[in-house]
Length: 444
Image 1 (cartoon, helix red, strand yellow):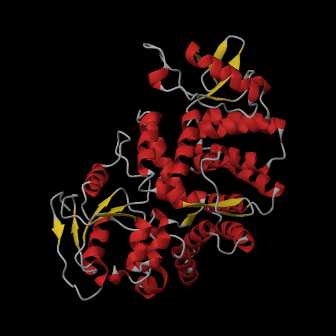
Image 2 (cartoon, helix red, strand yellow):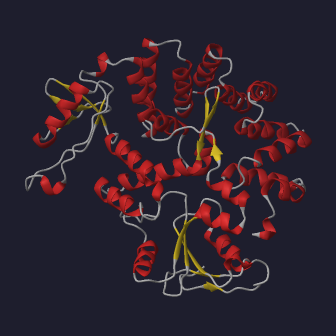
């Protein structure tokens, strides 16, 4: 749809809830595309515009991430809406979930806060599983529920963290993002959580340790400049916080002397060199390296962690993932086996074993591994998806269809869901499950 395109109402009798409303959208919607949302507006008696103007009566803010532009500022549409409201215009700003509730689209509202496993998030948001789990360890995201070791995360929360990280990596300052999020508090009261996440992301921008001569970057061994303006902050924090993180200074840029360069906020792992790290520190460092695609270095970090804690199933699991990414499938399979030997209900490890067995050409062993995972957690979407693929490869299409239908109850818009829908359409059974699983698509 072009920037100046507009959709006009065609059926004012179908629903009065948007009759007379001119609706515009900003930010990424979690429940549907902007094009679909415009169709919803038209079908419910309103008109959809691509710009905010004096005729706009409703601005809907998407809840996948935050309505900030590439420079970390509030979106132009949001700023324009605020100006119009301040001038007395009858314009409402609604969150996506509030708008869906207004329309009575409860099944779509659930999409905004749908729970995803780490593997599903990797497919949907292109965030590696290791990064998702590391964000959990850092407190950036919190599982809504957990089945054995498997966490389920709120999609919106993870998408919001990804957006904050993207802006920081693009060079947008923490102060700029914080200022913009704080300004949104009046309109979107739920910004306290992303502000806390932003603080953690800013601190975790680089992993270093302090030796007798200053700061050293752990992954490269490069010595970092330790500017006087922040050295006292780091030193005092190390003395008071042995957990590995130190707090940012409250000193603002305007309070600092002119021409003073502020050192980036670091996450200090230890006062000593890595040779004195404990297993948790090595494991955390390995997860960080995996997130930076430093796979070989991550493997060594996980091995160091296992030397100190050889019976930790999670470290074996992450080492297996790193070995697989390095191309060492045999080594990965062995480590996944160790993980399930240490914890028989490590359902993520069983599922990865099933995938590796299938890749190795042993379909029966793959199905056995998936069955173990599904016996422990019958509603495990990842295992459903992968087992269905193996069953289809074996020609057991009816059994595969059952699992694909079950998978779509958890996800129907990500890459895995698209693959499932394609397979169901090929089997001529997609139409029969559309209304039950995906909701009545014709109504939206």
